[in-house]
Image 1: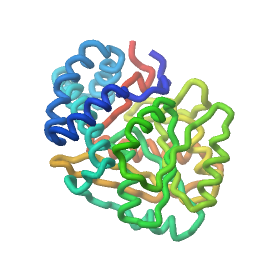
Image 2: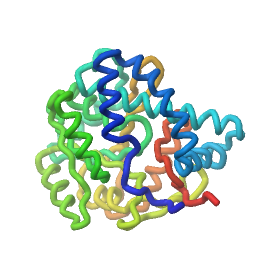
Image 3: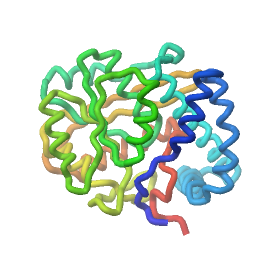
Length: 293
């Protein structure tokens, strides 16, 4: 299996419809319970995804065969919980959750500079919920989330009738690179640019760095942009914890001008620390290290 991501996120419009129905009619906890139904299906028929997760636990985390197998099921379940939470929180059920803000003052400092900022995250935890942390706690925060999967727009259109409107915008990466102009325009408006740094598409340029003891490919774009635009850069993660609790981490990054490789190395070191604390929230369901026989 190629190491690059295929551009599609897990989940379908039908799946979102089902969970919207359950959340609306039976509540969040019932929706969590519902997650136990599709997980065996994914474990049996999504062979490539299961192999990717098994490799992560067995080879990169060093788990036993038994612990790796159990962790695959747990990871699917936690991932399902994050999908339910995303719908529930964005549709007005935010008060049913608790939150911990670790470094939010750093976001406020970025906004105070009035030249925008770049937040780099990864597909761990529930990063899309970051927008609700910022817009609720920092009233002047305006968010632009850079995404790559085109199907996200279809899901967003489906969810719009259920979601509370906010100041979030989406910037979709395009082959003609026009998204670069959108990013620059957003920064000029003192917007916060949120972008993931861990999914490489074979149509894009890449960098290589070590993560969990093995070299992997990462997209050049996020790190090149962050080291050239001369705006503040932070690493940010929103991690799920027990009992409907979310923990936001925001950390300043010292950026060397035009040194994307240096920023990438700092990024992978940071991601490792997050995964050491939250090993079940690695949501890259593919051969990330291009090392599966």
